[in-house]
Image (cartoon, rainbow, N blue to C red; front, side):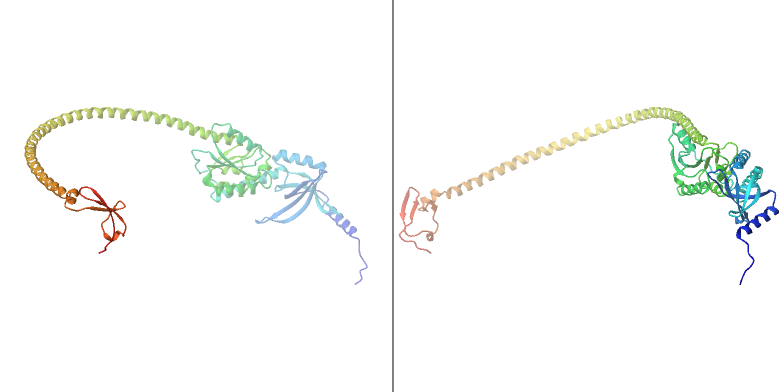
Length: 437
């Protein structure tokens, strides 16, 4: 197919630009949400504008916009002075724009003015919508209804480690005479990551609720836009339903955030939060001192009453002991007299028995001595009858070989020298013949 009629792309782009300029020669006011905002090194501000449709928040329209540097300083300063917040992503704005079309860069909107009252109204509408939703869901007053522990010493702190507010908070606690156990859950406290970061920190604390008495959310001062996260539904819903009392010190005096509204104790600054914790322990300390004084007073009264009762009991005991002692003494006297009589009778009877035993012992001793004397005489006669000298006098002799007594002939050999002891004298003999039986 041969095409004979054609135009260059640049000419087509020029036609589009002229048609747009003819169709929209004048600026118009446009409402949109800023999804991205960047200021380059030249001072020009580039934005991406979106319009979200329905409840799902999916953009149904998108456009690029630019604020030239000769206008951006004035527009941004005016917007901040009227709203208290910086122009930034997430804000709904009413902008005065002109439609611009460039052959190289395409369609864009050139911003020449902004209406800050529209943004202020939109922020307030969002706040009221969030507050109403929390009320409708029945969670708005849940954290505020939690009772504060009597002693607030174990504190979980949600803050940024480098924030001046956190340092002020810690310095205030350190200057007090009380000891606090503080654990920091480091979080972003400004910018787009604030909401998710604080929610994540609260989730970590929720897993260890038994370790803490309360949660403190603190940060230093900042712009209104830095504090926008503390009006978000998700964050405020987490705070409202948190199982521990939440104390806030988010650092803005003009307005109260929704996080402050749902927290158990809303305070203005981190220093005020620290002062609140110190005051709570001072009240406990004062109560303890009062209780100690009351306890000492009661103890003194009880001790005095006890001493009086002891004295009275001692008197009654002394009286009872005196009466009992006299009764016992009388019984002991009677028992002593009876014991003496019985002992005398017993001794008399035993003495008579001892005398009889003594007489019997003498008789038996004499009889035993006579018997033993007779036995000794008989033994003497037996011993005398067995005297070796008397036996040898009857013709017996003692024969020895080599100093040993010879009792058997078989032990002597022919030629052995015998030593023979007689009743009177000794003999030596030599064996001629030995007969064995």
